[in-house]
Amino acid sequence: MDASMIGLLLAGVVVALWLDALAARELAGMYSRRLCADSGLQWLDQSIALQRLGFVRVDGRLVLRRQYRFEVSLNGSDRHRASISLHGRRIASYVLPARELPE
Image 1 (cartoon, rainbow, N blue to C red):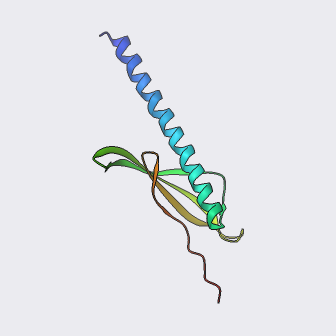
Image 2 (cartoon, rainbow, N blue to C red):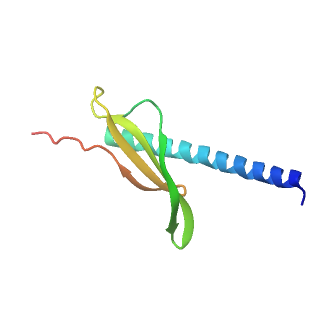
Image 3 (cartoon, rainbow, N blue to C red):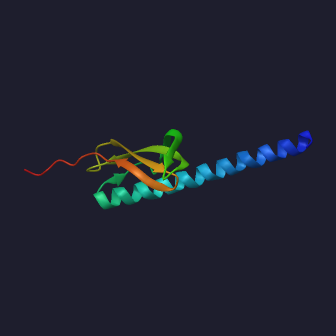
């Protein structure tokens, strides 16, 4: 195998990983918007950022664990951090700010 084939193969792998990362980010954004809507929170800035990336074993298979962070508002005038973790394409966990209980 010559150098040009190896370069082409590496470029293909990089593009595939980049596309997978974009798809996972879109999925995390969709999940976080849905969590906010279901919890009565406002999803701020329409953005989500990758916070942590690693591998985890799920049902005997090694999958990527991606943790994203985003910001939400309880009442429209405050900001709170929230996060969501994906194992592969599934939600593994999420953290949303606690709402105060009415007195």
